[in-house]
Length: 228
Image 1 (cartoon, helix red, strand yellow):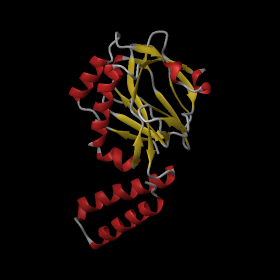
Image 2 (cartoon, helix red, strand yellow; image 1 turned 30 degrees about the vertical axis):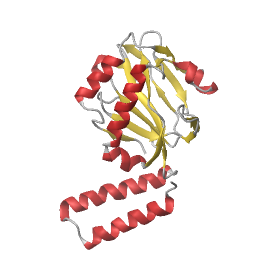
Image 3 (cartoon, helix red, strand yellow; image 1 turned 90 degrees about the vertical axis):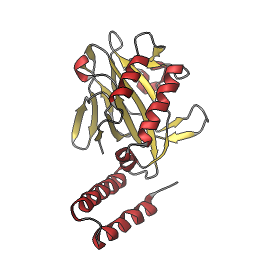
């Protein structure tokens, strides 16, 4: 499931992120953090994880996600890898087709996280740069996204994806992975669709015996499929 999450960050938060991710931030060569296959495709810059800017922005992103009900409903997060930040522009301007690693180590604890869902939070005004689309291959073909600053997109970590070359300006973004309580993308999609339609039914008819029964179906499916 590829899903647009609008306004994960508000305008003030976006402005702060942009100020912390300026040209003179501690950017490192992106290929240093990639796996052996992805490193051959990765030509961008990545913010030093140990930097003060990274620590502050990680807290900002995680706090915003904690308040975003659509993010929770769509991902059913068990654990989230601390967000990372990248920059595309100049001679370091693309990330070719690749698949994210299946398991990733959480730096602070050394624990392993299974990557079920990938997330990108866009931090640059799309009018300020050309190119830089996130292209994700799914069952319906390749889909390109380039959302407003503060918006996010989630998609299955099993997807082949890429960032097209930035030919003007600079693209900055946050990216990270979620281990979901529900491992299957198809099961998460079914639960998401059921939950969204329950909200619509309640909005239209209020709480009814039918919505109560369907809520029970949702939670019984979640109980059956979830691992915690």
